[in-house]
Length: 567
Ligand code: FES
Image (cartoon, rainbow, N blue to C red):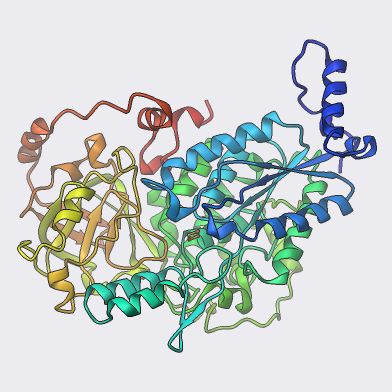
């Protein structure tokens, strides 16, 4: 901890008299019961995000106590403060729309309030990228602490966890293989403890990537939410935040092109969520960097899938923790990583890995050896072509490889409302070999890029046993979902992208081998259609919705706001 810590005197409220400002601040702080001795200590802020609308953070009060204990024992004063919290399933139209709001809140409150370093407590999907985006922009020493995953539950002897099993059972219900009584029973057993979704969904993916980036204490990404180790990790994080005081190691130094590549390697090796590509682009963007989808493909070709968790495999996050966690995975990937990247502890990634017990037991049913991967290549692949000039993403590790080279007839839904109205219509003209296309669900649409890319199999096909079809959209997909689903088509339909020009009956060709997604319609016809596209609706008149509509960038730039990127 540096002697230069300013503590409570950091960034005084401006009354035109600095001494008066400090006197007044101390006086008001003492009204909360702090002594002068307390107020002379360095301050660790704690961005604290419990909410009755966020089930994933319900254990935060207990974790907060542990963080504070760690800060106090290391000699500083812990002061928590609230920010926006984003509970994935409680937000309309979708949590992504509010990620940038949370990042702005985090950035401004970290910068405006008197703290020498900050612990960022997040967990549910968008909270972690939002906090890191804000912290990179704020430029103050910071360390992240995540909620940790939920434990699994049981249903009639079968293990279940949110939310891959949510979708699996829902698909069975739609197909008529389980009844209303059973789906209601399952509903009460999917999410039974505090913590984030139990599989390698977006929250767990982001936790793993943040550890790989170096913004979290080693070994803490996968600890289950209710495990005592999570409290020990919280305490250690508090102590580490005190060590960071006065350090030049701010998040904008830890997030660099090499550490972003390390995170991409881990994303590919864990078969992680497609959402992470957007969040990494946004985090990198705050440091003035980008995530190239061409580079993602190069990394994907040379990074094996090693982690056997749902939705691409069998296990749950609690198994990953017991199997050895991110440390064991990083050891397998060591020669593919940039080992000179600095981490929040001051060690390089290489030093961290050298310090680990190389003989530590690893459950090879969950974390495979490099020589015996689950898949020889990475879980994600970027596609390009006249349908997606700036790229699209396919999670090949969660897809049916029989559909990787496929040409089919487009069945188009012009919006989410159109999809909801017609997908189960018995008169819908659709066959198993068709390609379902959803338009106007991208970041520039009123829907704000929800996780709607997992288009349901039309009921008339689902009851015949069809389990997967090629589905294409400018939307996202939950990290817990699976299927041959092309996402994030960029530019999106609402910003004039060619996806909006697809019509029923057009032919579309997908080639994973060639990384191509092509609309087999000639340019002259596409130009004719483009000229007929109606003028976009006016943006909302006021408030955050207006700011979002005016400033949001495409998926290739992480759906950040243009004015939040460094100049
Ligand atoms: Fe919070 Fe899944 S709902 S992580």
